[in-house]
Image (tube, rainbow, N blue to C red):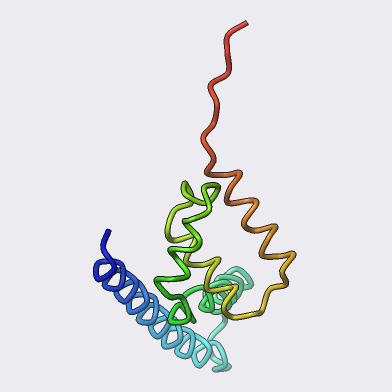
Length: 125
């Protein structure tokens, strides 16, 4: 993939995640407004769902901090080459944000590497 194709892909990914984040914010605002009205009786299950959706909105934020250079460097490491792009983008975003410790990032990367490594076929005995 050429550099211009990579840039176009990253731009599209970032724009899609930005739009998803904005939609989630709007939905959460409406849900919180409705939940705060005394005549609405939200169940514990419904409130749990709201909390999940509204706290996960950060999963779609801050992708603008990831660059093509970041992605290229990530995949230059042979152990990372089987990790799907959506996971690498999330990992790179988390690293750029600076909200996770180096140890947390290493642990997360190790989980991705383990989950997506080539599984050797077990030999019949």
